[in-house]
Image (cartoon, rainbow, N blue to C red):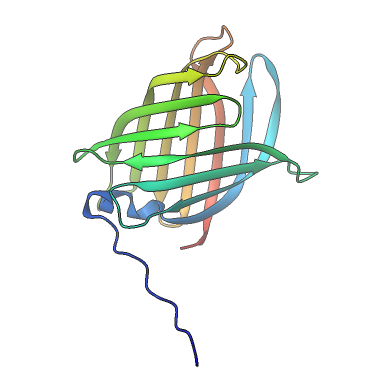
Length: 168
């Protein structure tokens, strides 16, 4: 007997603006900050849903030469009202972030622009005061920038990457 795969749940209507994020994205990025050496990384991000009013997010980076793990984060994207977005994110470095901001989609490229309303850290995590993210999706191309104020430094650019959708 042949087993046909079951279709997944319908995307929750509140998440329609985030539909362009769904899938797995891979690509490369670069990082810089006054307190560290500049670096490059390879990245994989997956956005999934289960039909509820959120999109799940999972991110992993690795060293471009050795393939060794570098960073990871996981979280959830929510759209509480048209044009607004909330993101809840956790990192194994001991940080938990809550973002609030704007989301614009529809006929234009998807653009998410958020700023942390809360950054909480474990006692052993590095000090991070503010984080900001801008994500844009056009077709199968995703670009982002990440800015932060951390370890006594003012808010400034830290990361940028360009990824391509590899699984829809």
